[in-house]
Image 1 (tube, rainbow, N blue to C red):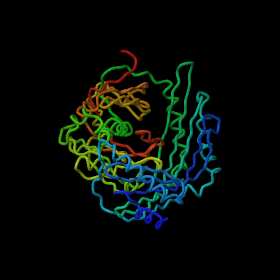
Image 2 (cartoon, rainbow, N blue to C red):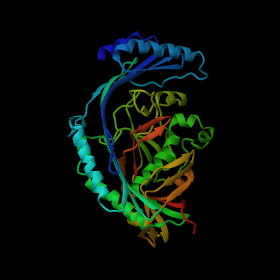
Image 3 (cartoon, one colour):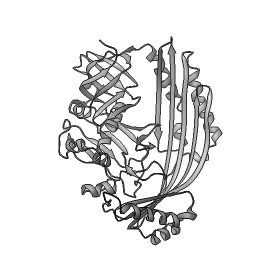
Amino acid sequence: MHEQILRALERSRADYTEIRIEREWRTEVAYRKNNLENLESSSELGGIVRCLVGGGWGIAVFNSLDDLDKRVEDAYRIARAVSSKAPEKAALAPAQAVQDEVRVTLKKDPRSVSLRHKQELLQKYNELMLKYSDKIVSTNARYTDSFKEVTYANSEGTFIVEERPDVTLLLSATAREGEKNIQTGAESHGWLAGFEAVENQEEKALKATQRALDLLHAKPVTAGVYTVILDPDLAGVFIHEAFGHLCEADFLFKNPRLQEVLQIGRPFGVKELNVVDDGYLPGLRGNFKYDDEGTPRQKVYLIKNGVLNSFLHSRETAAKMGTAPTGNARAVNYQFEPIVRMRNTYIEAGSATFEQMLKGIDYGIYACGSFGGQTMIEQFTFRAMYAYEIVRGQVGELVRDVVLTGNVFETLKNIEMIGNDLVIKGTSGGCGKDGQFPLPVTTGGPHVRVRNVTIGGKAA
């Protein structure tokens, strides 16, 4: 395949040509309540060619290497046609040519574990949740694994072969008491690891189930404006969804208002606030040495010492802004072109202990986990998985139905304390953008204390 790719690149008539080929082995097992909802194992080979001609892109997708020369020619012809009509000409920032082979060592390669064994393990977790209490009315247990061998080469001399494993586990239980009181607890995790990562996870199944039961007896939060402490999970989701996406340069180009607000050097929080998109943290989900343009990943400070410091770039967006690419060009699979995406996005640790953060709060909210949310430019809405009252500096009773809303820029300015307990983790889901979902990412942070947070709930 190596020589075949090099020949195809050499014969290309385009100004620039790249070829990305993926061999993937994947498995999914899913239970919903008592039903085995999905049980599948598959493998696939596919690839994509991108050609740049006169500032216009042409793309061709294929599933057979026998057609590689033809697909390169197809992409060239499309690019040539596009270039004559494109209102804006694309260009690429310079990148050093790389030749590398990145292999992984796994304790238990998922490809060597039988589908039956994977099913039996997930069935055990599912039954643990179902049998825990007669108030558990439904469960959702899902296991996935993927092992990709990605070969990337371009006409500038880069040739990379990289192995990319991915394993995820979702364990969710739903409890009911009466007709209207229905609550859910969930544990969601993802790893760059082998099958060993999902073994011996009974505690997570029980934890999700007990949380659902506890929430049945939790009182709904009273709507209001509070000092809030975000746990590391929720802090990570917040910084990824509400702020990280705004720093993706291709998104920035589409929003004139954001271009006015997001000016490099502008203060966005306390001096202790550092927001990072880290390129390569081995062992965490979605962590690979190179992006899908063959650019080495790097650590990027979006906010440094409370000041906006950088954006995230592909080679194309870097050329538009006259800067260097950051290794953030990613595609969910070979059927898509790479676009600017986050990798490991987190708030760096500060200096405060959790006990110090509690002090001085007469009545507040300690919000934990995330059941997702929505963002609209700088406005956000997030639903916490669960939360606790903070009463006179102490963690109090469990509360539910906690929905946090606000303006991301105001919220960053209102950060009062940043904890010393950074946690970065992957989940079983992924990030979505422009129809590409789910892309493996990790998020994280320490505990973060924020004043003047609006929380929806029942009226006071």
